Length: 328
Ligand SMILES: NC(=O)c1ccc[n+]([C@@H]2O[C@H](COP(=O)([O-])OP(=O)(O)OC[C@H]3O[C@@H](n4cnc5c(N)ncnc54)[C@H](O)[C@@H]3O)[C@@H](O)[C@H]2O)c1
Image 1 (cartoon, rainbow, N blue to C red):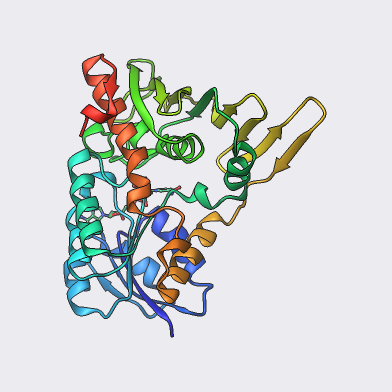
Image 2: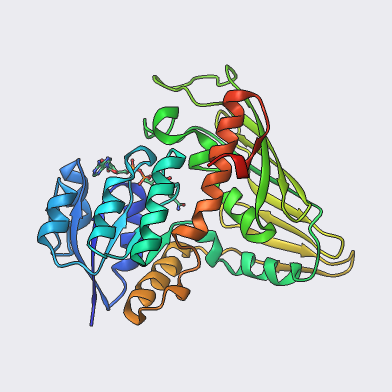
């Protein structure tokens, strides 16, 4: 048996998934859809897949076992709902939306229809995160400090707040998800933002140049996250987790880990380079075996990180802390 896959959205991240899926003998890439036909055609080349500019037509005419939804944040909603109606398993890239209502509506319908889902928070598949969780077992986290500091990505939707939701929602959400994976539920968020520090913002740029977010956790821990997208000089990606018995230090996009248990006892876990392929293999295996537990981040598990970033955006707007329980 092979798993027949169709894509909605055929841009950069779709290409990364296709590169891994093409290596899998039990996967058939059947169709690609994108409003920019040439993008769908580029990914379809060498696969024999059909090309569509209308994803609904693709869903209505092709026999698919699963769909990858690789769209910018502001166009989520209808594609997921169409997959749910058809009971089609779907993999959707993070962020799951640029607002809370769309994601809440999809989550309710996914749960009712019991459709298999996966969300592209790929760091959950990393050995470094899983090892961090093992090392933290039984320890109480005191505090966490995360950052995502860099330049402005080139896609125009990225630097328009009404489309991407801003850097926290679109990019730093990976750090937020790693934080909630390791430290559990966030109860309160407070955020401040910087504007006017970008040396050469592109036309249409209206996101914050930088944000600082403080977090309170149900466990009693506290955390902070710094983000910036205006830095020509670079910066980097990282997360430090402090507990009395172990300190976890994650660095770089691949979330390589240095764990310190005492001054003399440290452990290193290098981040995998082929993480999208690992994540895609898990999704395909889950479909083949009809076993959702092989997927380490389903829609419900992804929702909390999204909730936290949307609460941070609300705090940016109001200047007030936001209790997650009141922000639904
Ligand atoms: N997991 C990761 O590390 C990772 C990395 C990169 C991007 N992403 C996420 O993937 C998503 C897409 O990012 P990207 O870099 O591929 O963006 P992109 O701009 O390269 O590609 C998006 C594609 O969607 C198409 N599109 C837009 N609206 C459409 C619609 N209504 N119907 C069909 N196609 C439509 C565009 O034409 C474009 O080809 C974003 O949410 C981003 O955050 C995740």
